[in-house]
Image (cartoon, rainbow, N blue to C red; front, side, top):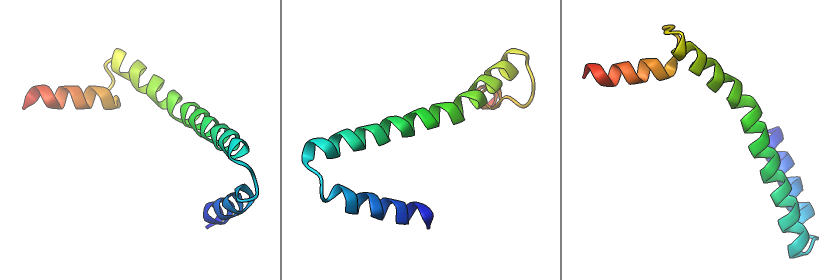
Amino acid sequence: MFIKKWLNELVYLLSFMGARKKKYILGMLGDGFIQACIVIVLPFVFKDLTDFASNKDTSIIGIYLFSKKRK
């Protein structure tokens, strides 16, 4: 609900701006989204890779690879 309201406000504000400013603002939002995804996802990927390297059963990559070999 909050995100929808925020996006509606953003569209309303962008309607008053020129094309160059819109492209700049949307580019900044896209970069911020990509950075947030990297910060959130990367620790899980590194933990999974270290679990796989140490042969732990909690590794998602290991479960995926070994289940493919069994079939």
